[in-house]
Length: 239
Picture 1 (cartoon, rainbow, N blue to C red):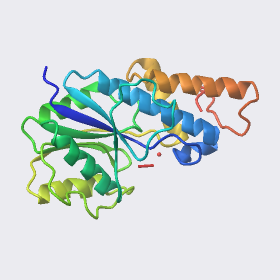
Picture 2 (tube, rainbow, N blue to C red):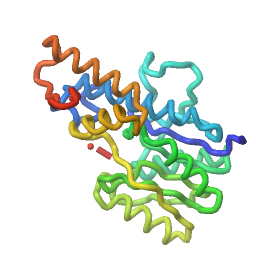
Picture 3 (cartoon, one colour):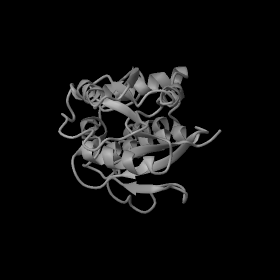
Picture 4 (tube, rainbow, N blue to C red):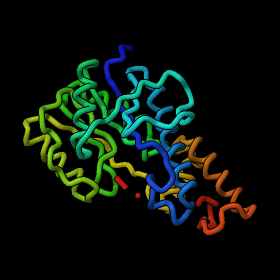
């Protein structure tokens, strides 16, 4: 199959106290950074498995040496501006290379592959595809064209982000379709949820589960004092 879609995984390098801060009360700053790294790798592995995708790392800044596990990552810097400006810049750049472009968050480890396949199918006829997060944001935006100021002055990190983005796309005359709602892993209870879904086979997030297991083991050895883990799964939200 032709690789006709740049799938750009948005990354904030996993530096302690700057990423997944809502997880810090449960796992501490280093644990939150380790989980952010695992989330990215699970998302990246899913994207790499798509035979129609050109995987791109869309990073807020150059990652530290040693973070990326391979040498064949293609890294694009997001550039300046608010989140909307940065997403728009990456999508516009991607469309100079492939027919379609997808911006994908890295906070949904184990995202079902079927959602990405559905986005690709819908882009064959739609101008845009949008996937809603349970918190009111979106986990995916795919486009076949990217008008200037497409995402300007939208409310970010709000429960109205998805609705406002969808309204903007349609106001611009873009034929837009939506995907099933999914969730980001932002809160301690989301870690419990992803662990249970992985255990049942509903999602595949091995890097995340290994990291959770390592944090649990460290706690049992007294190395992670102050961390809060649930009793039922041993596991331990910010758009």
